[in-house]
Picture 1 (cartoon, rainbow, N blue to C red):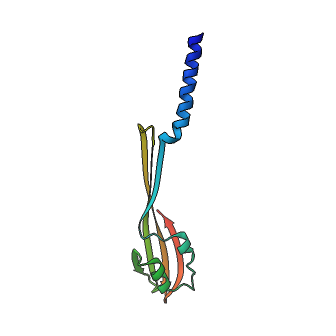
Picture 2 (picture 1 turned 90 degrees about the vertical axis):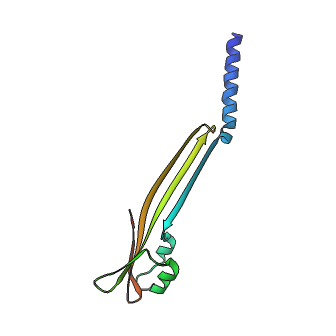
Picture 3 (picture 1 turned 60 degrees about the vertical axis):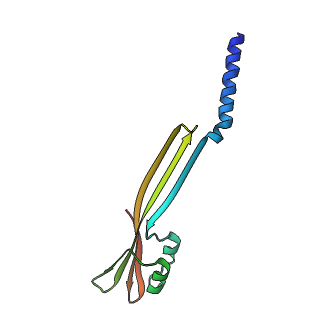
Length: 124
């Protein structure tokens, strides 16, 4: 009977110690990177068709990834980007894992006679 009680106490002690140390033995990290010409949602939402000028767009958003002249004489400016999310974690410095995913998107601004006439975003 005493041997059984000792085993239970030892097991409970090991479980308690493991739980107390768990915060020290588990680590994780995540990161989000942008490449290309990313235009933040906040900046993009400041664009107002009929009001925002080409100078503001170029000064605030920079040079676009590409420019295309459309049939009506307007220009379509495209800002393309790739967003990469990575994360990793480990448990007891023995078990570990990581993941990485990439998504892309573009912001478009159509300009005619020096003023924005239309703008939109897409996700690839």
